[in-house]
Image (cartoon, rainbow, N blue to C red; front, side):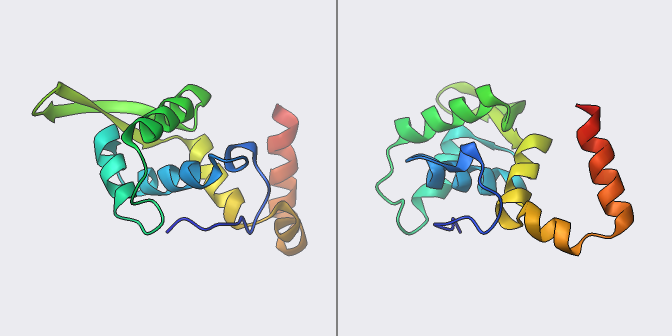
Length: 126
């Protein structure tokens, strides 16, 4: 599931020693809303991450939430804690995953003139 290298644009969220785990967490949360523990269980099922510590996963989730890549959205009943907070991918996180798969250079090469004008308009707003 989690690729070792990016095929697209280099982003800070996918750099450093936490890059593989960040990419994996974002990919897992792309499809559904999950609690921290559920994300941890999903990660443990993947080859190469079987010995990942729960505290490490929880810290990464907190860091991604603080930086705005994922967001809290709802809660559900849990056996031990009472309620577990559910996390989902933000538009910023979805954009990061798309840019990780496709580079800006490839987009510029293949985009139509209309797409390029829209792209320029979006960047000029900020």
